[in-house]
Length: 141
Image (cartoon, rainbow, N blue to C red):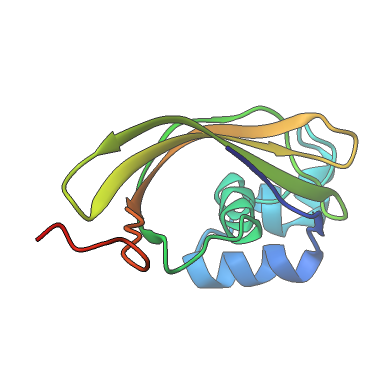
């Protein structure tokens, strides 16, 4: 199973609000003059902002997904600049039953920019409700 998202443009307001929310005012994200002299030549989005946007872009059915359990092996491949459009793709790589109601689904995540270049990759672990069909199933008794 693979889930693909629509695109979303990362704006200046996103970066400013994320800085305010997290307290991360690193000049790479918040100081245009400083960022001009940086290795990226301009302000860029926080890596964690991009990861958070990707999580929101992937539409999870709340009747199935119980919780995000872990984000592992996160690699920030290239910067996302203000004005870039990102999209996300998550593919199931394993399913492990935990009990009769919930399983652990591990997915690979890729976040790409508008050119298709990889910006972030990671592994997600989700607690996924096991679907049990009872309607139309005859009683075992």
